[in-house]
Image (cartoon, rainbow, N blue to C red):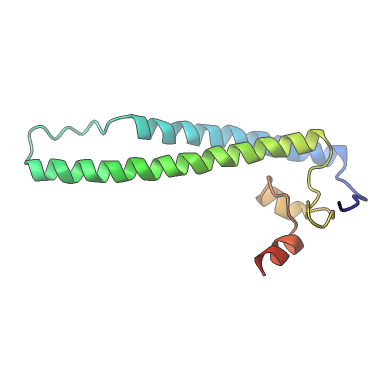
Length: 127
């Protein structure tokens, strides 16, 4: 285990907490929309059109629902990662790279608030 020598201040952690809570709220709205699009029918009835157009539309709708389902799964994971970041804030371990033990740059955390790796560790991982 890497020794942790520094951490973000309580005011920094409060700022990150606000950012993450806003992202969770927004992500939850997006997730709701995605789930709704998967469970709802198209509403564009094709009862009075040629049957091959109906088959094409149903195939397109199925692909769209599958895509939205995949996006919903990703969004769900994103929300889970953000909630885990809130736990790290409460534990005062937020922003500490799990590989190097160094502080993750604030700029990175503002862009990717659920990050657990510094750029240095991420680059080592990609080699």
